[in-house]
Figure 1 (cartoon, helix red, strand yellow):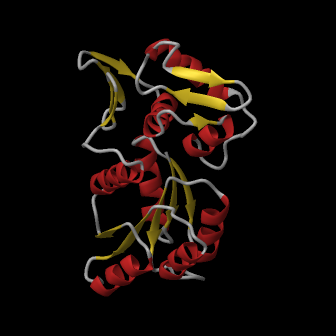
Figure 2 (spheres, one colour):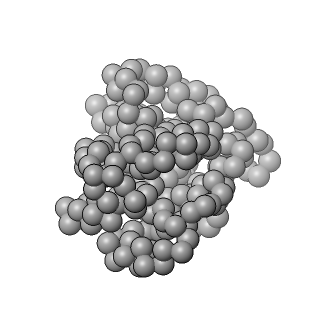
Length: 222
């Protein structure tokens, strides 16, 4: 999953970026409202973590502008705990969730995971397709509640995106946009390498190639 973290506190931003990367997220960062709005318009993000007190353009204005343009980008706003009026204004502007400062990174991660499941209409507390269960805390794959397979960071991010979008044709470009951050070379063939690695773990029939279109993750095997 690819996140946009909008935070002008450099120390907090660096800490969150590092912690979220360790939790299996590709994270882009900006420190002002103008760049945040532009990035949200131009790039493919699964979630935005948006501070409200930003230079150049407030987080509320950025969020409001996205919604006026018809963007359904999921947004978690960050605000001071005692700023209840900001939370109200944030929800009115179209926020999906909020988190008060200071907070524990673990709570932010849980809110991100919950929002992702709601966005993709998935029920339950774990990500599961057929006999496959993805342990997001330990970045492991559990098969038939018996076999546990370790995943690399990229394998985990790729498989999570597949499992959130079962049965859909996902192009190579779309996969790259949601698995890697903005500095990744979009012309790289690395995504194909990791798809082969996942097939070695899951079986070749689990991820189907559609020539000229992309890949389909089969949530139920025939």
